[in-house]
Image (cartoon, rainbow over all chains, first blue to last red; front, top):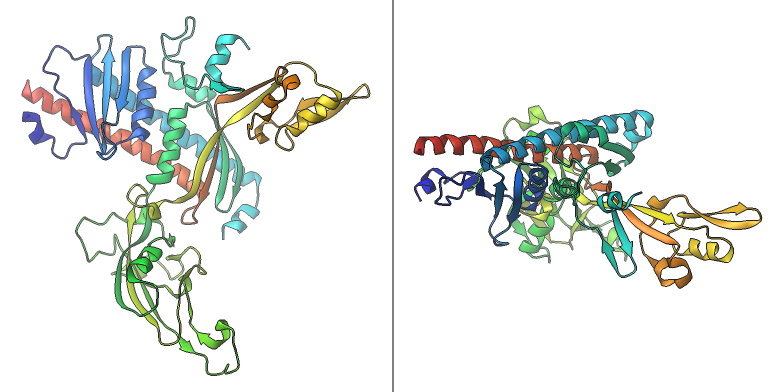
Length: 119
Length: 347
């Protein structure tokens, strides 16, 4: 409950399991998120070999949040989540780069008419 | 292909069901495979081929990525890439037969060509709007009888201004907008969308505010008409199919998928464009052919199709979608930092 005060505008909440020892198992609540981030983050975290379990639920369709669970073989769950977010970010960056390159390559190979039909 | 590899990389289409639907290449699932995440491996395998970019339509292949991520891009394209749309309608006069609320809804759905990246979201509760977050349009029409066409019976000749189209929407610059934008920059994407029909004496006097928003809030903000993907089909003929059977096989797939080759005077079936197949699985209804054909879909080969509403070009939309996902991860990385600092203070 003490956390409730500081978390008013937070989009990320860490559920207090009551067990301070259990750093390796955490449930995060992500506000204003859905399957878009939930499933892609789950995928990339499950790819991490330090992870025992990773999953998420949408507790109720009219509540705009997801519960995101991470259980590890020992490393702090927070670190795993951070690595997941970083990996996902790097991946997106590469996708964006590759896409931009492919589009400009395609536009060069198709002179004029692409520009014309744009008008 | 060995059996494990097939389970990992193909979705199998059978007569009564579909197998290997889910991604299984996670660490610990397969002995002898290193499935842990590696950016280098990803970058080596990942490819994007643009197949068609024609006006508002874009088709491209995204290869070497998981469905979870491809689906995130699709979902973001549909509901999380922002656009500008009419949100507030101030109706000073509307004597047409179309009701105020119906008219307001119709106005909202009109795609407005204005680059949403140049605008901010309007603060909640703000009714006025500023030059940074609002585009204003005015619609002032009054229908009248065409005095020159007394004999006419066609409405187009009898009346003036009886068809209210998006052409009548007049952009009203807010604040310093006239210095930043020129007349052509901001207008409806199409100028021939019919909004209402009037008869002599009926009139409309309306002011509209466009704001920035996302499709999650209302579908009118969605920047795409459609955004979808399908997996690349794979058709394998496990034994040579000749003669009448080959001709029949050809009719069981979409046009252009199977080609008949002449082999020693006999026609033999060959798969030439599996990509064109719609995966109807019609072949499984033919007992003599179903044993000779294997239907798969390539798990990591996505054929994306994006059709823009015309507000932004489709290639820009895909770039924006990638940026939206990156913004999400960045937002949570900062949140995570704050949570940790907070946690340490408590301890």
